[in-house]
Image (cartoon, rainbow, N blue to C red; front, side, top):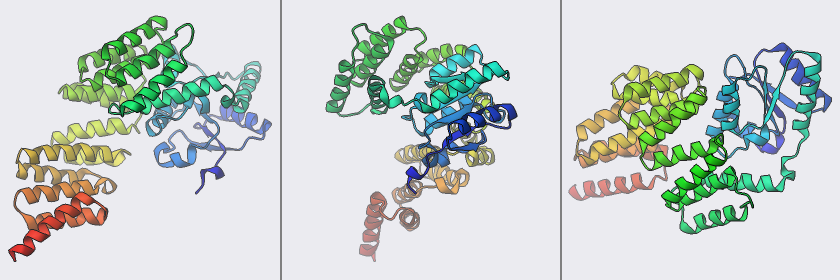
Length: 403
């Protein structure tokens, strides 16, 4: 269905009578259409519906799920979504950590509300102004938003000519007096060009200009992880964690890095800490499930993945582990691994690649009858799966020649 049919504002909050009355009255004053949803609304499954909303009004201190958790899921589903433009946060009692969190998430439409007539009137004027403001009128900001989206979505192995175009766009927006935003962008394009020393210099200059420009910390952490400099990445994440202990995505990232560093106890601590703050965190559920799977705790793994909306990522990890066993000619171990993976993965995440890899394992082990059966399953799931079809044809031809 065409998203043009869904242009209501979204209001996300739990049962807060006076806050709801305040929002409702503001929306009615401007005859603005809206849909009200609880904080537990499934963002990922409903994103095609939600992304067309002109504004999303989110209560930061919702009881069932925090506003930060909701916005982090939005950014996980759609990293390019301009939360600074579309999201309006209502907060009753923001802490210093909340202020850091707002900055990290890129939230700029923030309204502090108090249940007093004078304060409510001022907050009402603010909310209506945010509802009516057209961010597209600021051409410079629109250009910057597009540039930053391009930088954030450019893969590390992007073609040189594309990186050159992004670099040219950065130079075009260069201000007379260099600021943290431009220096940060210059660092990012230097990293894309594998000019690592220059990238680090630009990023440190950005932080010299603005020690609270948290986007630079995020880019440095991403850079160190890509370069397998895990200790450096962890050190920066710990620094940011000391400023804001509520970032769920950072706790998940810290767990992932500890997994790479083979410190599974610390990894488990961070995944559990993330789940304490957001019971819906698929990244934390997947990370904890991987630990439990490797420990042989299949029932708990299965339960964790049943709650995750990113089971396909767990399936990808399990596939890679099985492939490594096949490459080492550990066919029996690989098949045992794949059998366990089939058991713990939700049905929708048992993709054709899993069954193809099982078929491939049987083929390399010389058990062609079983290989054919699993390749058939892969092709039923994905009839155009060329690798599965090619292997199936090869085995079938050999079997025919033998007969």
